[in-house]
Length: 377
Image: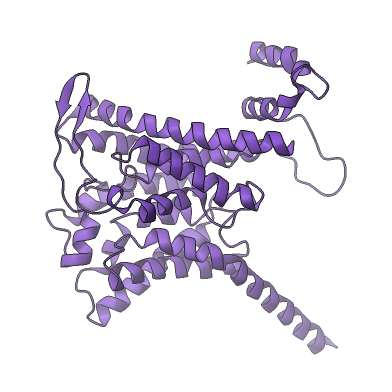
């Protein structure tokens, strides 16, 4: 690392303002702070100084995504009849081009906006760039991934001012764009398995409805059991099928303090409450907790609803927003079978309402303190 540090210091004057490549100052700074902890410190005001900055926080989220990513690689290959490392390699080869397109398009746009604004490179896309392909079927065309990524970054982040200012979760916006603009590519019975040529050999797969779609239409998970759904041996988007792998990631986020347990737990409680309500009223007959292990419910609860930018900022608000997110997701699944995956719409809807929830929570705290002062007087 010392040799790399010396190399960076040697070329740094070239990219500083006034240097030969000074116009690329923001781009160089982005790469430098990705490799090394920034050496700048605050000079006034009260601040907590720590070795962890936003980039390293985002890296920990990526670490939490690894279990779901690795399982997704294996299961993608296993679904077309491959076994062991061959299945894993097949899935890895299928997903890497999607990840590359997501990062190239997204980071390219972010670098461009940073340059024209003369701002630092935003760190948030380190996670969004991986999340976007992970929440889509591996059969999604690369051009569609790139178009959805561009839409999410431009209209979901940059128009609001960049990372930290966005109202909606960028990764979910990318999925929503594909869902509504190219519905057949992300829903139905023809997208979850695919035939593909690998090393000159044709790998044939089959097609069929997902467990979530069967749950919405027939009230059962078809040929799959609850254990299959929990472990992830059901069709679905690349990294959303294994609840077990997702919970391993949740443990990392909670242990490091990056994700809010209040939001995470409240989403599951809200989903269960709405599920049991439908079961109690006779609308559904299957167990309410099935909603938690099929589709993108668990993935959304752990990695999407807990987004610190688009979720609630107050502790009370986190309980409210989390509970409503889970409840609305199940409500959409049961009431409108045309949208069997209600988690995406529920999170985006509560993203829009989160600031309003925080406003009323703060106003209630202010009123409570004013009443306390009046009582003391």
